[in-house]
Length: 223
Image 1 (cartoon, helix red, strand yellow):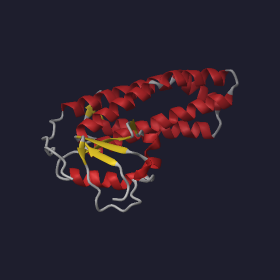
Image 2 (cartoon, helix red, strand yellow):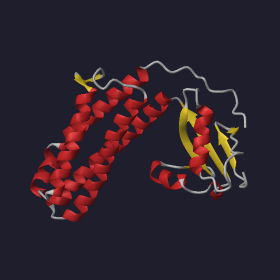
Image 3 (tube, rainbow, N blue to C red):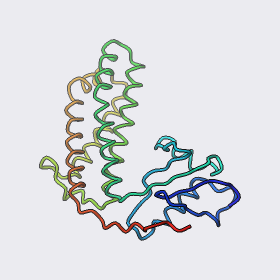
Image 4 (spheres, helix red, strand yellow):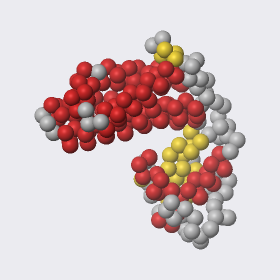
């Protein structure tokens, strides 16, 4: 290709000889995925000039020309490992919303509706990503939503409750029923979030106990 960019997959050179001169990061990602076909591996991380590309900036980065950077590095992992890591990060993010909802309750009680709503919007975004991480992660490694039991309840019930809780919270916020919202924040939400934490812990434990796929990683990635 016309641009001079070092592209690596698991520390091995990845060739894009057939790529156009205006190839983007997405083109390089497609090539990395092709290289992993048949290996039971998937692309797990992307670093450009040594900086990891996070979920928030991934879409923008994918559309940028490769010659934006001097080096691009892809790393791969088994889907099971990817899901476990994503669920653990989700668990941490969920726990971090506990202080935020307490702050929102205090702000509402003090009449500072605008700041309280800003805190709630951030929390709702985290809880929405929690739902996505569970559904998408479980689907990726073929988890049976009805067969996995957490605290004597099928995972499917937990997921449905999570979605229902999000809808109810959004409805309360949209209706601007701040008295009801304040009561939910003070008296109900902690217990709800603690239940979601137990669900995530149970799901992580289940995924970790699943047999690992055989490592079919090639000895080297041949350009």
